[in-house]
Structures are given as C-alpha cells and as structure tokens.
Image (cartoon, rainbow over all chains, first blue to last red):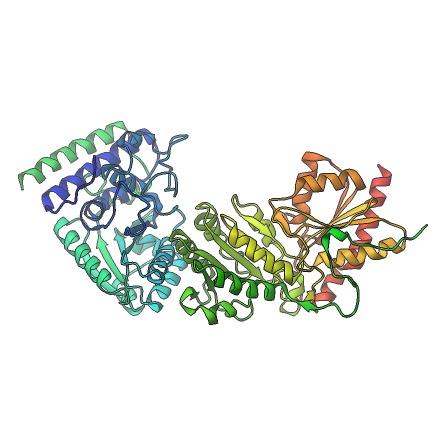
Length: 289
Length: 336
C-alpha cells in the first residue's frame, strides 16, 4: 500500500501503534534483538515517515529525497516496521528479522532493503555520515534535508563530538539531529554509567541550536519536526539543529517502560501476548480521542 | 661462478640508467597530491578531506584549487572516514588522507563499517607509512596498515613503488568502483618507472626476469629489490624482481608462475612480516604452489627513532638485507 502523507494527530498516533505492534511481532520469532528503544521511538518514526519527510517509497533512490541516517542501528526493528508500513517493502518480511538469508539484518545494512541509507550498529558514527551527506547536498545546491537519528548513549563515543564540532564549523543548517533521550543503556541508566547532562547546554556550547520535546507526545513531535524542516529547507547555512526528544523506553508496554533490562532483549511468547493486548487497548483509547 | 649483467624487462620501460646518480627523486605522497588535483579537474564529483595534514600529504594542491570541494576535519580521523562515507553515499568520490598510524590506524572501525561494508567510492591514503618516516619514532611508523586493510572485504590495497606509480594508482582508484587504500611514503625515493610503464590494479609488474629466486617487493622496497638483483647478478645469481603494487586483489597467477620457475621466493616490504605482503604471498602460494618464502620486513617488533635509511639497514629492509634473504631462500630450497 502506498504511503500517504498523514496530517491527523490521531491517525499518526494509530500509525505509531501499528509500528509498535509490528515491533513486538517481529521480535518474538527473532528470539533476539532490542525492544525498549524501538518502542520508545515509534512516535517519532511515524511522524517523520508519514508526515514530515520528503520521500517517495516508490523511488527510494530519488536524489532529491530527505535522507535519514539511523545512527543507533540497534533500534532497527522500528526502522524496519516503519519502512514496511510506508510501503518500501512487503510486510511479510517482518517475520524474517535476524534469520539466515533475510534482508532484515540484525543491524541495518545498506543495500539489503530499499530505504536503508547506511549500515549502522557500531555507535557514534551516524552523525558523521549525516554531516557528509549534508556537505554533499550543499555542494550540489540541493534543497533536501538530512536527518540523523541518534541515541543518548552514543554520546559517550568521542566520534559523536568530532561530528558535532564539524557540523557547527560548516554551519550545516540542512542537518537535523534527533536524540532519543531515554536515559537508559545496556548496563543501567545513562546518568549512572557516564553522566551526560546537561545535553542541551553541551550542544548550545558547541554552537548548535537546541529544541527539547516530549518524544512520545505526537502533537509536540509533529510541530517540532515540521518547524525544524521548514527552517532547514529555508536556510542551509544556519546552525545545525538538535532535537532532544525525551522518550520512554518500552513506551506502550507497561512492564517494559523505563526498564533498562529491556534494552537488549526480545519478549517471550507470554510477554509478547501481554504487550499486544496492551497495545490493542491503547489503540482503542486513541480511537476514542 | 659466471656473472651476467642485470637487465630489466624491456616491456616495463623503466628508466634507462636505473642505478645512475642522476635518477630523479620524489615521494609517493607528492604523486598522490598532484594526481588528486588532476583527477579533480577531470571529474567534478571528486572531493577531498584532510585531518590537519593537508600540506604534508600534498592534498593542499586540491584544497587550493577546489576549496568548495574540500573538507578540513581537524585532528579527527574517525569523523573524517565517516564524513567521507556520507559524501560517497550522496554520489561523491571521496578521497581522504592522514598519516597511516592514525588513518587507517585509529579509524579502522569507521572504515570497516561505513566505507567497506557499505562498499562505497571512498579512496584513502595512509601517508608517512613504514619505517622510513624515521626520526618520529615507533609511534609514527605505520607498520601494520597493510594487514589492517587487506583483511577487510571490498577494500583494494595498493602500495606504490614510486611517485609516478602513486599518481597512476590515484587515477586507477578514481575509476574503480568501491574502496581503495593507497599506502604512501614521506621519504623521497628514485622515480624508476616512466609514463610507458604499465600499471593495472591487481597485476604484478615483472621488472626483471630471473630463474634462481623471485623477489616480490612492494613500495620503497621495490627499488631496493632491483639493487639487490643487480648485485646478485654480479655473483651469478639470476633473480626476478616483481613489483607487487597491489596487495589486494593479489596477482596469485603471476606469483605461482614465479614460484614454479624459481623454486624460492623473497618478499620485501616496509611493514610487519606478519599480515602484510609476506603474509599475503604465503597464503596464496600455500593454496597454489608451495615453495620456501623468506619474508623481509619488520620482525614482529616496534621501530625506533633514527634516519629512515639507517633504520631500513638496521632491520634488513634495504638492498643488502634483501640480497641476504635471497641467498637464504636459495639455501632452504637446496636443502629440501
């Protein structure tokens, strides 16, 4: 089914709910993979791919498209679910995640599936690649926007800050980064493992503009993404923009929410059923609004 | 023992007075810089990046003429490799360079995942590679880069033997699909090839034919191998000299032919004996036609400060060292 631009907040919320259901259904047969991050980012992915992004699922190589670099590749299930929902490939592939011969590799691989802009997994490398794309767009006089989706944990990698410096130096106003600020990583909370606050002050000090939003409030997400894109398209010589999106890891599934233990494990059959039941109830709640 | 004069292979069109005092000298990094500028004039999709060493890698020639197609990344080699990947994913042919110890030394992971796994048109050089960077000492002597790069799928590895060939390698890299690593030296060395000398990625240049021992050399060791072959000829030994400028893809066919012909091999490189050209040749011969191989290179230890050629002599990578290795290889063959 072709992707249609969706403007209604309710419909976008339903799309995010669909994506969450896909994520659970994908991870159950995979028997390994990451759950909390993908669920937390479902709202932003829905808003991006079904509302804000300039793209065409029929032409994944369209040179004028906005590009999305997923830097924290371990949240691949939310990317796969979104691309599948948006029509980039057949949703029947979902159940092959992480299986031998599947294009849905454990971490995204460029060339395996349409819509995957780069291979990722090793943390801290996406923002640099997005900088390269933003520089190329400027050299070619293109009006597209480069999006980089990044995690909070990968700000512990030094390379992230090398890219932050470069983006500020070249005033990459056509670059928009979105940080999944969910405060968890594998071994615990970010502030216990290696304190990152204040992220906002750090980015401002590095000559970026910063916006902070609730990454699970669809209205707020849509408004922020639209505003950011309009600004980026209008002037590619601005400061680069970081959208710090506070998200709830495991969002939508009560027993996963805010628990770092769900960073890197999939649900078993019983947990998956409970999760799907909760998402079904959430869906009804969205419909009532 | 009858002696016979050393002659180079006429098909290689080497400089006529190969060992004369008038031989021009230039560093392979100069060949890289000039060719990058020329390639940039021919192809507007070519862009270049540097990590604060634009001048010493001669990338400044490109930078001056095409400032809008040049990205100065500062002392941040990891970022540079990934930014280059981003440029290539947007249709550019990205050339980046820094000193070999830092790039590909420090940014191996970025090259592996962003450049090689994505199989992009990124061409990169490790400059000031090898022992001949001399006085800077062990920290700055890249002796592991060939091993680091040749183990990566999709990456082509070239180690030019003179400045002219370095330029040919740049043009060939620009025309080739996928990642290419080019290893460069700081030290000036004789330019023994000419415009007529063939260069094809993956094809060994047989600089001199021979029947007693085959010397497979790369980089600055190629000219040393020629000198060694000349001295061996004076002692009645017929040594073949093979310029193995491409370490990957390796010209296994020519290697096997010379293993059969000579019955023993010497490899010579300014690199650790493990994992570099010597390792690659042993792997290929073991699967094709196994003969004794004596590897000239750094014997699994770190370098130290000193003059570039003092160090080459100390660790046996000069003509004398290669000649000794040839004698040893022939002795091993005889004992078999």
